[in-house]
Image (cartoon, rainbow, N blue to C red; front, side, top):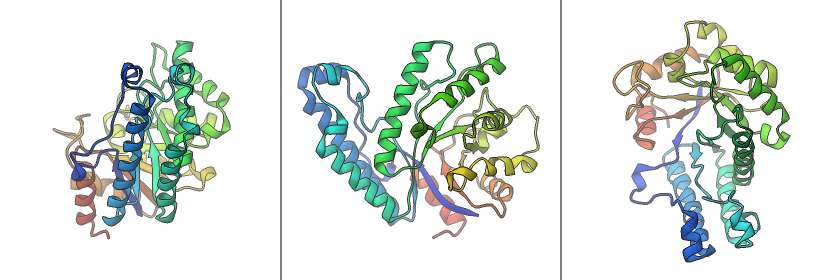
Length: 301
């Protein structure tokens, strides 16, 4: 049974309000408060989005990874003697977000970007990826979130070896990071069968992206027979499974996202998850409007 449904980052109903990014040269030009103001704006907008969601019956949300731009850059500490983790104004706003999340049972997640690749052949890329995961853990834990979703990474000409590198790096990560990490099947390289194999070696919970599975499955599995493995991967978390859904822009196998979720795609997923509790992240161009359309279609409050 579908429990919570949400969307990622941008709320189109609140435009022109938007999250602010920042360049390092701008911090040198205008000072550290220029960056602080942008971070504070981002946190205030996150609060506004969460309250909008609550008023519209949406209790799941993905926070932008750019919530605190630049904060992993060493120059901020070396040249400005500033850490976001010691900034009382920022920490207070994060605590405000956490209060909203906890009081309303909101499932909050983050999705580190495509440059977070822990199976890379380049040790520096792996090192930077782990730094980025540490940042996401520190942010997500302070916001009251639960899920940090990543992909397996590149293939590098040898898929089996790349998977083993992922397993080795994952198992070496700090337990605080692993507590939040989830592994999603992708639409190009790593199938659901692949990430379930990685789960068997790491216990990382699996996020099933149903559209990715449609686009990339090698016809190697009957998903109806394997869905219980996805569900079981969440046992140690005390959370129900988190799934992703999107519809192809111009057809079933189009990897580009449609503005909305097609009714037949939604019904197919509900059939797959019959009698299984799950939360659903909608990945559609129209964001919250796509969620509201699904809620209306399914007569959800």
